[in-house]
Image (cartoon, rainbow, N blue to C red; front, top):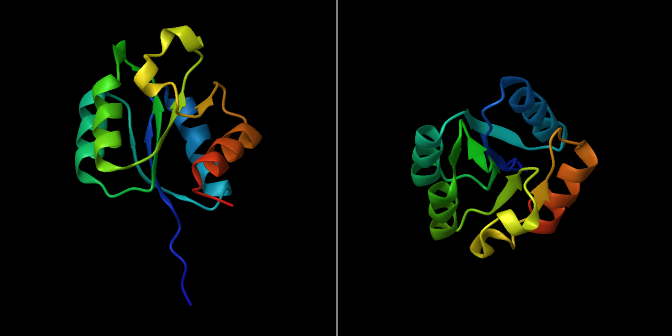
Length: 120
């Protein structure tokens, strides 16, 4: 019997944080489907990949990712916000999403992924 590992899109513009996040995703039994560092790449991934989850930095290279989050939501792909933004700085339509604060702690990421139901 084979089990499929959940596939994750990572949207992070800081190379070292992206690497740390990818390592954490792997440690939690998931696979990194793609790692993108700009809004254009994130939009393409959100529109074309059939991932189980996206972990999205709220600001990629100075551009807010709201369009990316809308695309993910329309396709039914859950997401975790990777941000240190205050709650009042996040538009209400995205405030339901679990958040992880940089630098990423494995325990916090695990809890957010459990909240969404990606891992047990």
